Length: 270
Image 1 (cartoon, rainbow, N blue to C red):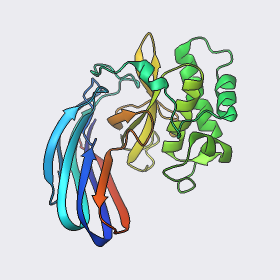
Image 2: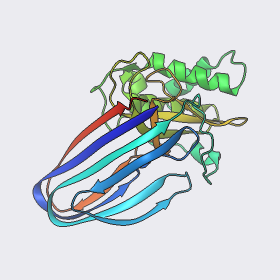
Image 3: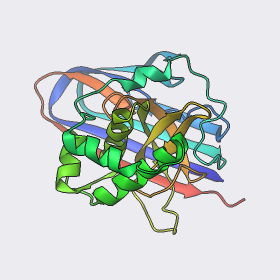
Image 4: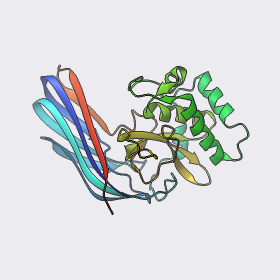
């Protein structure tokens, strides 16, 4: 499937800032499931800095913007050819040990309810892969998809307690459940073209990957109750949403910030 992406992020300040620095993890991952046809990332009025590929295999690029600046706009335009690998991250080069993803964060803290959900979900499971699928299904059942009921700093335990959340909450809850059972798990940011039934979906998306010793990293998307397929574009990963964020930045000044994001994903007729 060939997908085109048009992603614009704008930061507006109510008072001019002295300058800003951005760290961008906005580049398609390189693995067997996707091939970048063209991809352009630009910070309007900014200066491109250095770039590198980190231990997790993600490309990170730095940008700086000299002030005074009242608005910072980050534009992504590209096209990716995707293939369904049944969620398996095959052909992805990275040097970080999977055990590094056993570390707990604030967002993935394991409450007693998280641990109970994890252990109950895998009762009778035949193997590790079956356990991972059962965990994803259990999270999907325990947390209903409901936009607007949580915020960027909601933890997995909080989302489970209220029984509602968005894809970020599903991913955090699944990661916490997996780690509670001794399975390395991580957060993945990217894009999703549409739901399996063709229904429109918020294009910026997140899911989780669980390490299965005999296979490798496998993606699970509790929000859509599936493994990532050709509708997904994978960008980067981390211990949680904060670490895997596609955009991180610092602005110098006293102005209050307002954020606006638009993402459009379309399929190219083949």
